[in-house]
Image (tube, rainbow, N blue to C red; front, side, top):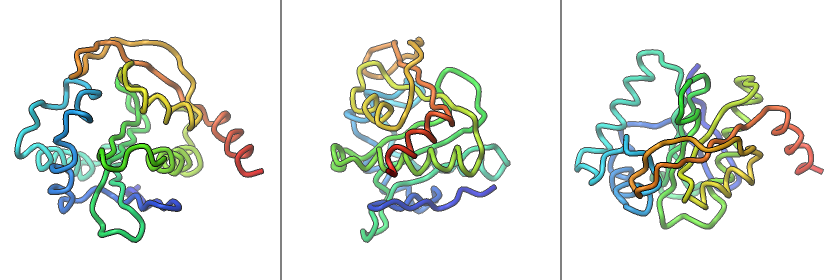
Length: 188
């Protein structure tokens, strides 16, 4: 299954493309974003970091790996990528099944929460997942708030080194039943 375009009130989530490299490089090369990410992400971010990332991810998609990659674009904007969400529905491991980042000029507007709602709907209503896991650096309060607002349940801490020096990460589960109950409550 291809990564579908998803739409929200203020955003278009479209599949990642090679043309997104310049915007990703410009927005992602930012310590305020990187410090909350695992040390798998290189820092200092190399000049070809975004191109390497995008090509690697597109190669995984072409090879048939089960991964969905969206860039966030403002509805009615210029089409520039301002963030990214990935969903690896059946991936096992410590880092969880979904991750995201948003360019700093767009923080504190509820945009990521809006995008995550669309991705959760896709995960549960289209893919039919029963549950998936998500993680964040224990010091990343904004990421924690997004998880809390989108129905994730805290399950505990794991060890996962992050650039900001912390090695403790929070692990959360997002369950289909809880998600659907929460969606019903919001639609009343």
